[in-house]
Image 1 (cartoon, one colour):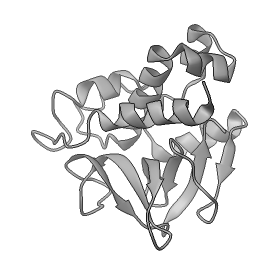
Image 2: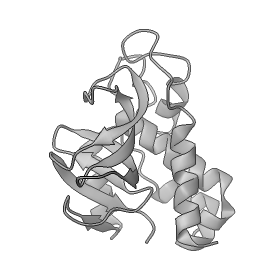
Image 3: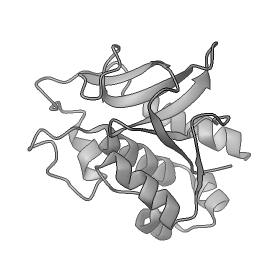
Image 4: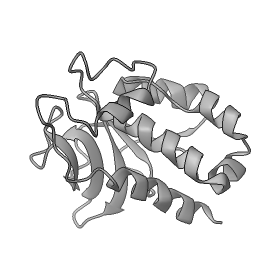
Length: 172
């Protein structure tokens, strides 16, 4: 399977929660599994922002459901689980990418489906497609249609390239 198809599967996993909203600030039954994919499983109890927890859950699910992902990365399931980022902090994902020698792009480069967009405002989302005028569509957890960093659920929405700190590419 080519990497585009694998990256589309990652985006499809992120879309599973699009449209779901919080019951109270940073809490809902669908948010609890996101935190279990991180090294901070009590994050929901503490009402912490969950954007990176959402990405950790997407990555964990992607590896668990797709043996082709493991093949493409040259890993066993156990190695993938040890390797994947489990941080609940957006900026830590860039450090994880650097430590694992993943490609890191800046805001002016061409993005691929499944790239992880890290913003200066300590927020992370997944790139899913281009829009006119150098804008793009992203799936974000703990966000809203207005684009706030601390929002009310999981949304797929248009974004501008302003405020991007870095972009992590997991698969070429």
